[in-house]
Image 1: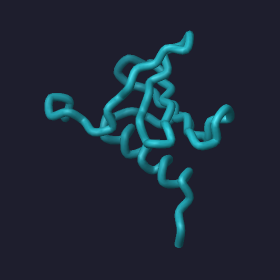
Image 2: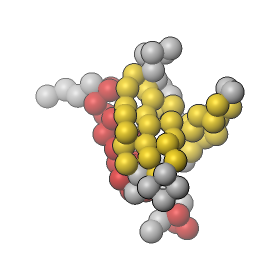
Image 3: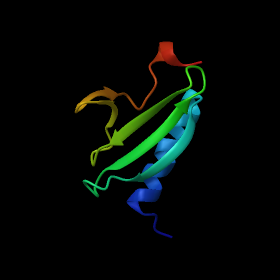
Length: 82
């Protein structure tokens, strides 16, 4: 059974959130560029909603508004692990 790029990217995003204790709120194809995805999660500690752009090359970028963003490492650094 072949899995689509969407299915794989969604699973990776769910694992990204699960490892950090975030709750997935939504996941979709970026309507401005169908080779990218947008994921949204809720940080239960801060109750902040965060939107992540996932690039074609699987890089994660937190969207900050006003065309600003910051790259997020997919793999946790040792000091970030719980």
